Amino acid sequence: MKKVDVIILGAGASGLMCAGNIGKKKSVLIIEGNKKIAKKLRISGGGKCNITNISVKNKNFDGDSELIKSVLKQFSNEDLLNFLQRHRVDLELRKEQYFFCKNSAEDIIDILRKSAKNANIILGEKIISITKEGAYFVVQTDVSRYMAKKVVVATGGKSFATLGASDIGLEIAKSFDIKVKEFTPALVGLTVQKEQFWMRELSGLSCYVYVKVDDKLLKEEILFTHKGISGPAILSASLYWRKGQISIDFLPTKNIIEQVDASKKFLSSTLNIPKRLAKALLKAVQIEDKECKKLTKEDKNHLKLLHNYSFSPAGNFGFKKAEVSRGGVIAQELNFATLESKKEKGLYFIGEVIDVTGELGGYNFQWAFSSAYVCAKAIKIEPNKSIPNFTTK
Image 1 (cartoon, rainbow, N blue to C red):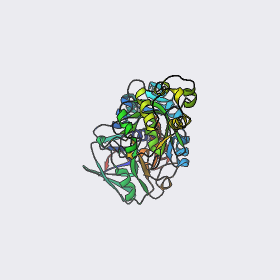
Image 2: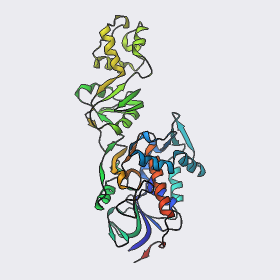
Image 3: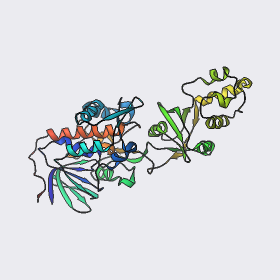
Image 4: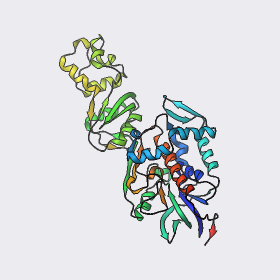
């Protein structure tokens, strides 16, 4: 049986970042079920990966605010940008807030691979279970067994099943009596009820909106699809929506009453949005498309609904379309300074497997890297007698 100091389960963004920051004094083994590392990172953002955001704050995440604060304080978006700059990864800023790789996500994967060069990486082995034998954890895969003093669970969530995603991380946690929230789809499109089927007829059309969910206000594009609604604003809104209503301001930068009062055109030509959308919206709020000068007081009251069109989505597009998973190991089970389990010493959880999920815009990769760094730092500074790589019991 192969024995090392640290086993990291998962060779994604968080797993590789963790391995690269543990240092050379401890033997590290990474076990990955896929035959390639960082498959999700590789395809994200159209292959260019939205790595972080110009502004990263607690409010951009759904999760325990104290845990998020503790982790981001130890490794912020500035720290991540400095790390990438030191390794000469060229980034580009889009919409004045989103950082993408200028060339390809492969640039980041290359530096993660190089920084983790002291770790042995085993690919193509599916993780079955973890048990404890004395002072060691025993990791069982579909091929072999491995032992380590410490295990870092970086197995991600359930989204992107085609990339090998699963809930094995939660199963591992539960086997040690660690409380979790089951994964649900997040950053995902929303389906609509019969009253909003008109939205499906606008498939392919997009526009800039404000979406309000509870106390959250998301400002980005909405995309109409044959299933319902998607686009950046809706994906982020889906993170906070559980059930009940959301509201959309379809004319967030204009006052609709001032617009129509100053116009002699037909309504659909005055709204300054795609005419297909304008006509559909007017029908949805039960207003005839007519000359603005002919609008009644009642018409104008109905028009105000376009600043606050409220409805209840039917559901979401599911894990197959979800960017990430919401849920995971709950914050109270972890040491906020190290991300070590409070119940099982030597067992750590990082990345998406923790019950912290970010909005669309680079926040989830930021969380992956930040949580990985926090965990690695804790393991690195903890003294122990190192085990050479792959000694045999």
